[in-house]
Length: 444
Ligand code: LLP
Image (cartoon, rainbow, N blue to C red; front, side, top):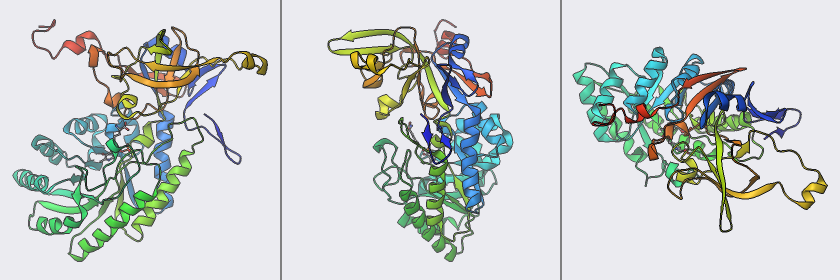
């Protein structure tokens, strides 16, 4: 996990072995499992803060007024939102539910909220208008029309940006690529100017900015520059048309390295900032960013316990107490997550290794009744046995936030590591929680 550069060591994760046991910052994971059970999400507060500050510093260095609006969907835990809000973060939300989370986590942050999403409902628009959020990222003419109507009904002027679709290809998984004209997202950049012009007729609409988001887990920074070049030229046209554009929202999407190889997050953010600056050229508008994954993914891991090891034909299956309902990324996107044991395997001498390997090619799977319920397929891993604790790395983003109760499984608990102490920030669900909303269930 450790990468050596010229004279510093970069560990992109807060998880490291000490005395042969895996720690998250100052807390050992064996103790955590004993105290809170498994499956358990574990996050490092220090790393979340550090990643957020990487963005702050990179854009301060690029000398641009900016606000980092963390994408709530990546990990919407109230404790994490509060941690980021106290660092000065704004928030990118996509639902009325996420708006409520921001309100609950840190009410003053509502004024730094941008509201994205292709299907905003009337009640969500109303709630966001009442909360006086910074900006609506509008994704269709029909939505703009509804926004004007609701703003008028509440006698409030709605600040909006059109989320334009720049038709830029971001090399990523097709499910999370959004910037091509074939995708449902945004408004064709070529029609944007006319829509801004028409919006000028409503005194309830304030064309405040232009926004773009081309996808997620994007590893090359050039597509960000290409998208912003197009946006910058649109802003120049809009200024000619007399619009007072004050914000440019570059969206999120910066990818991490899920592998075991070298990765320097600070360098990556610097490259990203340089690419955005190239795309923005001399555009003076206040820059909004919506990073999610890059801030929280590597700060988090899913701690799970091996239940059984079994062989079927030629295959060996390691069955863990976590399943696809707890972390769906491998099942949904064939995403790779590194899997490591909590107890560091003994290093073998050359003589031992020659005789017999201590690693085994296995599938790591959960108990859910689907063959799609896997965390790894045909992967060489240390020989695990029942009761061993193992960790799925880089699970801080789109892990807990994409959990479900499939197979009537309670969602995992979550702990936030703050230096040497661990704080339970979400308790494990109980059967009572799961059955509570059902009519004629055991509670009624
Ligand atoms: N802004 C908008 C408008 C978005 O749709 C997204 C992510 C973001 C910002 C944050 O993107 P990030 O910086 O996290 O890449 N569940 C998938 C990822 C879905 C991304 C959806 N939109 C996964 O697990 O890979």
